[in-house]
Image 1: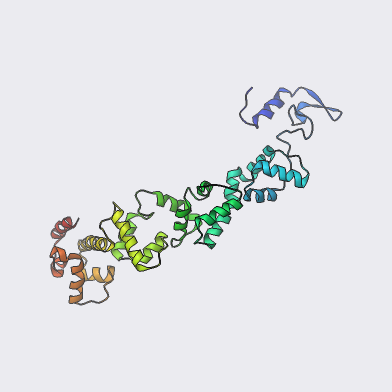
Image 2: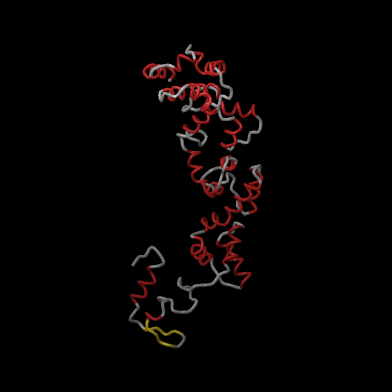
Length: 310
């Protein structure tokens, strides 16, 4: 018989010898009474022989980057045992579902704390931490295994995002890789920011960009908009004008007045006909549509005019 795992082999072995009698420590016993299969001698290596191991020591050595072979050698030396790497491996599987999973469970929280505690840590410094863990990964591939296949730069970027939480890392990673999203953010959210004319520094902070001055933030957001095939405009100001025009017409199609739109939705602080007209011309001046004309257009006229904008 050929078996592919170590669970079925002893069972079949015992089945074939169940009618045999065996001499164990000077006494005869039937094969079914000693669940060792053909290996009847105590401590003879049966997989069912359970050996107590210092699991906390094993966990600490896994954190330090040791493999099963190293762990077995150290335990044999410190506890006067006679272990082999497979026995250590079985115990790692039992408690942690495998060495790689153990690394994720035990090492990942330490790395998370370091990244949060030192948000400006450099990549080279992080290399040194991995060396401390006895891991030499030139491209930090193990780092990717810990953090949803993201590289060091991407993880740092996500950490800087507003309301970041490690529990949301998987979703944030998917958003970052989603081709339908712009810098990990949906088009609808970008349009909402543009309609609100969200401050550039706020957007940079939400995106996790380490930008502190308004000039750099302005040029960065404009570059993102310009390079995106999903957003209209070569700059943020142009995109704001475009999406506010569209939103204005959508509101007007609901019979909402321009005064309400400009003051309530676009945050125009000072009312009055002169201020309303001046604000209106920022968005519709190039179309030669006065404030009063747009405010009194019929549904058909608004639909026709919206077609010219888009």
